[in-house]
Amino acid sequence: MKVEARLLREPGEHPLPRGMLARTPKARGRPRVEYRPTVRTPRDVARLRRHRVPSLLLTPEWVTDSGYPVNFRPWLVVPETLLAQISSDYRILPIKDEDALRNPGPVELVTFLLRFDPLAARVVATRNRAKLDPNELYRRVRNEGLERPATKVRLQDFAPAIPIVGSALPSEELAYIERNNPEVGAPP
Image (cartoon, rainbow, N blue to C red; front, side):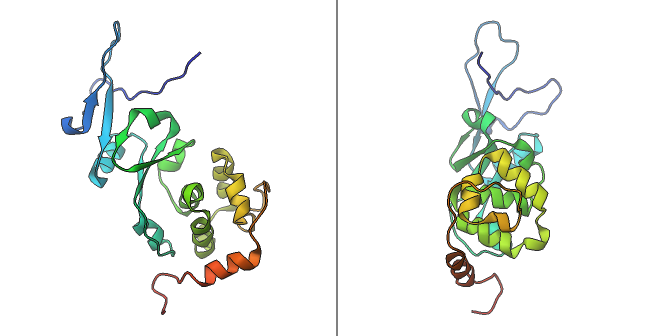
Protein backbone atom coordinates (compact mmCIF):
# COMPACT_ATOMS: atom_id res chain seq x y z
CA MET A 1 0.00 0.00 0.00
CA LYS A 2 1.17 3.52 -0.71
CA VAL A 3 0.07 6.59 1.27
CA GLU A 4 0.10 9.92 -0.53
CA ALA A 5 -0.74 13.42 0.69
CA ARG A 6 -2.21 15.95 -1.70
CA LEU A 7 -3.64 19.45 -1.52
CA LEU A 8 -7.15 19.45 -2.94
CA ARG A 9 -9.52 22.38 -3.13
CA GLU A 10 -12.94 21.60 -1.73
CA PRO A 11 -16.11 22.81 -3.50
CA GLY A 12 -16.94 26.39 -2.53
CA GLU A 13 -13.50 27.07 -1.10
CA HIS A 14 -11.72 30.23 -2.25
CA PRO A 15 -8.63 29.44 -4.33
CA LEU A 16 -5.11 30.63 -3.61
CA PRO A 17 -3.83 33.29 -6.05
CA ARG A 18 -2.96 31.88 -9.49
CA GLY A 19 0.65 33.06 -9.36
CA MET A 20 1.20 30.94 -6.26
CA LEU A 21 -0.03 27.64 -7.71
CA ALA A 22 1.37 25.28 -10.28
CA ARG A 23 -1.12 22.77 -11.69
CA THR A 24 -0.03 19.15 -11.59
CA PRO A 25 -0.80 16.89 -14.54
CA LYS A 26 -4.17 15.20 -14.23
CA ALA A 27 -4.31 11.42 -14.39
CA ARG A 28 -7.22 9.73 -16.14
CA GLY A 29 -10.34 9.40 -14.08
CA ARG A 30 -9.30 11.89 -11.43
CA PRO A 31 -12.30 13.97 -10.36
CA ARG A 32 -10.39 16.91 -8.85
CA VAL A 33 -7.55 19.14 -9.98
CA GLU A 34 -4.41 19.07 -7.82
CA TYR A 35 -2.21 22.09 -7.19
CA ARG A 36 1.32 22.57 -5.94
CA PRO A 37 1.80 25.79 -3.93
CA THR A 38 4.94 27.82 -4.58
CA VAL A 39 6.16 29.76 -1.54
CA ARG A 40 8.58 32.63 -2.09
CA THR A 41 7.68 35.32 0.46
CA PRO A 42 6.33 35.58 4.03
CA ARG A 43 3.08 36.79 2.47
CA ASP A 44 2.78 33.45 0.63
CA VAL A 45 3.12 31.62 3.95
CA ALA A 46 0.39 33.83 5.44
CA ARG A 47 -1.85 32.97 2.49
CA LEU A 48 -1.28 29.26 2.99
CA ARG A 49 -2.15 29.57 6.68
CA ARG A 50 -5.26 31.57 5.84
CA HIS A 51 -6.34 28.70 3.56
CA ARG A 52 -5.72 26.15 6.34
CA VAL A 53 -2.57 24.65 4.83
CA PRO A 54 -0.36 23.84 7.83
CA SER A 55 2.82 25.88 7.41
CA LEU A 56 4.96 28.36 9.32
CA LEU A 57 7.95 30.58 8.62
CA LEU A 58 10.65 30.16 11.27
CA THR A 59 12.51 33.48 11.31
CA PRO A 60 15.49 34.75 13.31
CA GLU A 61 13.27 37.56 14.64
CA TRP A 62 11.06 35.00 16.41
CA VAL A 63 14.12 33.39 18.05
CA THR A 64 15.54 36.81 18.97
CA ASP A 65 12.19 37.82 20.52
CA SER A 66 12.40 34.64 22.60
CA GLY A 67 15.64 35.83 24.18
CA TYR A 68 18.37 34.44 21.93
CA PRO A 69 19.85 36.91 19.43
CA VAL A 70 20.70 34.91 16.33
CA ASN A 71 20.79 35.33 12.58
CA PHE A 72 19.96 32.63 10.02
CA ARG A 73 18.10 32.20 6.75
CA PRO A 74 14.39 31.55 7.42
CA TRP A 75 13.00 28.02 7.34
CA LEU A 76 9.60 27.01 5.97
CA VAL A 77 8.15 24.52 8.46
CA VAL A 78 5.67 22.06 6.91
CA PRO A 79 4.37 18.59 7.81
CA GLU A 80 6.30 15.69 6.30
CA THR A 81 3.11 14.62 4.50
CA LEU A 82 3.13 17.85 2.45
CA LEU A 83 6.88 17.95 1.83
CA ALA A 84 6.62 16.75 -1.78
CA GLN A 85 3.63 18.97 -2.51
CA ILE A 86 5.15 22.39 -1.71
CA SER A 87 7.76 24.18 -3.78
CA SER A 88 9.70 26.93 -2.03
CA ASP A 89 12.69 29.25 -2.23
CA TYR A 90 13.07 28.82 1.56
CA ARG A 91 14.84 25.93 3.19
CA ILE A 92 12.20 23.43 4.28
CA LEU A 93 12.03 21.99 7.79
CA PRO A 94 9.71 18.94 7.81
CA ILE A 95 7.92 17.98 11.02
CA LYS A 96 5.81 14.94 11.88
CA ASP A 97 3.13 16.59 14.03
CA GLU A 98 1.14 19.17 12.09
CA ASP A 99 -0.66 20.24 15.29
CA ALA A 100 2.56 22.06 16.22
CA LEU A 101 1.83 24.52 13.40
CA ARG A 102 -1.64 25.57 14.58
CA ASN A 103 -0.66 27.98 17.35
CA PRO A 104 3.10 27.69 17.94
CA GLY A 105 4.63 28.89 21.19
CA PRO A 106 7.92 28.46 23.07
CA VAL A 107 7.60 24.66 23.23
CA GLU A 108 7.21 24.39 19.47
CA LEU A 109 10.05 26.84 18.90
CA VAL A 110 12.35 24.71 21.06
CA THR A 111 11.43 21.56 19.11
CA PHE A 112 11.92 23.31 15.75
CA LEU A 113 15.35 24.54 16.86
CA LEU A 114 16.36 21.06 18.04
CA ARG A 115 16.43 19.96 14.39
CA PHE A 116 19.13 22.37 13.24
CA ASP A 117 20.58 24.21 16.29
CA PRO A 118 20.21 22.26 19.56
CA LEU A 119 22.30 24.77 21.53
CA ALA A 120 19.90 27.56 20.53
CA ALA A 121 17.03 25.32 21.65
CA ARG A 122 18.67 24.98 25.07
CA VAL A 123 19.21 28.73 25.46
CA VAL A 124 15.62 29.53 24.35
CA ALA A 125 14.30 26.91 26.81
CA THR A 126 16.39 28.40 29.62
CA ARG A 127 15.22 31.96 28.93
CA ASN A 128 11.57 30.93 28.61
CA ARG A 129 11.48 28.40 31.45
CA ALA A 130 8.35 29.95 33.00
CA LYS A 131 6.41 29.59 29.71
CA LEU A 132 7.43 25.97 29.02
CA ASP A 133 4.98 23.20 29.84
CA PRO A 134 7.12 20.13 30.68
CA ASN A 135 4.41 17.69 29.58
CA GLU A 136 3.94 19.44 26.25
CA LEU A 137 7.72 19.64 25.69
CA TYR A 138 7.98 15.91 26.40
CA ARG A 139 5.13 15.15 23.98
CA ARG A 140 6.59 17.29 21.17
CA VAL A 141 10.10 15.86 21.54
CA ARG A 142 8.75 12.28 21.54
CA ASN A 143 6.39 12.87 18.59
CA GLU A 144 9.23 14.28 16.50
CA GLY A 145 11.76 11.62 17.55
CA LEU A 146 14.22 14.22 18.86
CA GLU A 147 15.31 12.41 22.03
CA ARG A 148 18.99 12.30 20.97
CA PRO A 149 19.45 16.07 20.34
CA ALA A 150 17.32 16.79 23.44
CA THR A 151 19.66 14.62 25.50
CA LYS A 152 22.72 16.25 23.96
CA VAL A 153 21.67 19.66 25.33
CA ARG A 154 20.09 18.25 28.52
CA LEU A 155 16.46 19.24 27.92
CA GLN A 156 15.63 16.78 30.70
CA ASP A 157 16.28 19.78 32.99
CA PHE A 158 13.00 21.23 31.63
CA ALA A 159 11.02 18.03 31.01
CA PRO A 160 12.38 15.18 33.16
CA ALA A 161 10.24 12.56 31.39
CA ILE A 162 12.24 12.88 28.13
CA PRO A 163 14.19 9.63 27.79
CA ILE A 164 17.98 9.84 27.78
CA VAL A 165 19.33 8.72 24.40
CA GLY A 166 23.04 9.04 23.75
CA SER A 167 25.46 11.25 25.63
CA ALA A 168 24.99 14.81 26.85
CA LEU A 169 27.31 17.79 26.64
CA PRO A 170 29.01 18.61 29.96
CA SER A 171 26.93 20.96 32.10
CA GLU A 172 29.91 23.35 32.40
CA GLU A 173 30.01 23.73 28.61
CA LEU A 174 26.26 24.45 28.46
CA ALA A 175 26.58 27.02 31.27
CA TYR A 176 29.45 28.68 29.38
CA ILE A 177 27.32 28.89 26.19
CA GLU A 178 24.38 30.38 28.10
CA ARG A 179 26.62 32.97 29.83
CA ASN A 180 28.31 34.04 26.59
CA ASN A 181 25.11 34.61 24.62
CA PRO A 182 23.64 37.80 26.06
CA GLU A 183 19.91 38.18 26.37
CA VAL A 184 18.13 40.58 24.05
CA GLY A 185 17.94 43.99 25.69
CA ALA A 186 20.53 43.12 28.34
CA PRO A 187 23.43 45.58 28.75
CA PRO A 188 26.65 44.40 27.02
